[in-house]
Length: 417
Ligand code: NAD
Image (cartoon, rainbow, N blue to C red; front, top):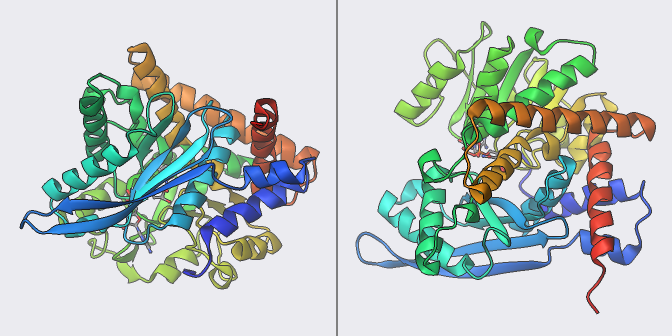
């Protein structure tokens, strides 16, 4: 894992790569590579023992030309300004890749939630929402879950916003519990798009995902659901990991049982009948499919040189460094980029927002069917662009599609005098 690669610079490099194939004026390109605004704030929160602690918190609104800013909120000690800026930029191009009418944003708090009680985390979340209040709203900027946040935090954010505004506005955040205005199928959405694009990628290469062996790095919302759905498609998940370590069973793991073990013990490590692996063992495992589903920069050039998988599907945002990309391209490894692979999350967030606006809930089957349509259409567009333009990677192809959409909207908006 490479700590010293700045994800914001990686994101800008990915845009530059795609821009080389498009006719974009330099000033416009600069605009499409920088956030419109970034809020940085210091939250002061009272802890259970009566003391006060401060936390750095951020919200980056990258681009709103195609619709309200949209993107998750991350709770992690490594959260910083450049990471949030990068993640907000990736959201812009992700929403454009799957052609949903959102711009991109992202937020985060530098905190390790494991060190705080639920009551303390609630106060942190409410303090953060109060700071965001002038910036967010159903038609302005719509936060969602990301690493270490989920329905609980989204319910708190919605309640704080609605209480301060004296209104009901469920569409101000997505990823809520169904009873609080969430959508059926949202929890599984990111892992579901990962499994769908894996299926399409194997078919593209003339294979079948059902015959694949799989390693998954990260066993949170994105990783565990991807493992489970890939298992349902017939693939054999032989290795998974979380921040405490990796486990391996050449006969195949039962994703639900591993999930229960993680729930009961706090980690996948020590799951019965498995060998213990290092993070590197997992990333370089002799498998057909590698799914990095943890954090950015998980695979650097050094690890990439030892990757055995023929296909990588990026469940995490930015898990490969640009140098790793170059190595994998040389090895003919097919990389399905994050802005498509994990776009299921924001796509079903979009469905949730539509349902909130209409005050009309969809069935889970409708969500699953519409998501499959959006993701497979985007995959087909990626392949069409990849082949028609003779591009060298799927990442370039997806960025060309997305950047062209954002460029057109930005040009139509014009530049305020
Ligand atoms: P999560 O908090 O539910 O899970 C993260 C997992 O990664 C945990 O199991 C954690 O232990 C593990 N992890 C952290 N560091 C690790 C390391 N060094 N090695 C191995 N495992 C490690 O988070 P999530 O929501 O599943 O998000 C994971 C990734 O997917 C992030 O990059 C996130 O931005 C991306 N993503 C999530 C969503 C979503 O809807 N949740 C949508 C799009 C993208």
